[in-house]
Length: 215
Image (cartoon, rainbow, N blue to C red; front, top):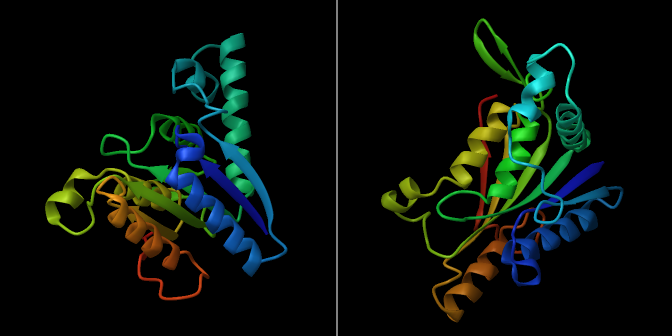
């Protein structure tokens, strides 16, 4: 079994999402000792934002690709191949300005490739990356999950569920720690609830939101 561990927080050792992804991976390896882990730190190894050069070879913008197009295509191929080779993806996704970090979005833009992670048919799009498990460590300074207004404001968990569902992945799990900026007691309670929600962890999985999405 292959696990891809992805972090995207820019806070380094101060990051709660990084702390949670490390704990999720450790717990998964304890439950599945045969797992091999590949690690990607998007705050360090950040792909360039999506440009015409990143798309050029895919759509044949010109007969002879430029050096920049070859470089960006190689980056995209490396990232999508790494993603497709994984059986499990553990993804650190903090909420920045109501959505995911720009580094994480840049990675996602490299994964979304026709013929690799999805295809179009006469009946609409079909995901090609099914059969994987995605576990998202979702961290938030405020509380968004408990009210209609809060749910309308966040474009982090909702976005990732739609995105991975579009890729054909139906097993998407959210391990959530929110209210982290609302005082020490709230932060401690949020982390305790998130740890209870780690798949395979002992105790009640009170904060595990597993989304069974249509392919």
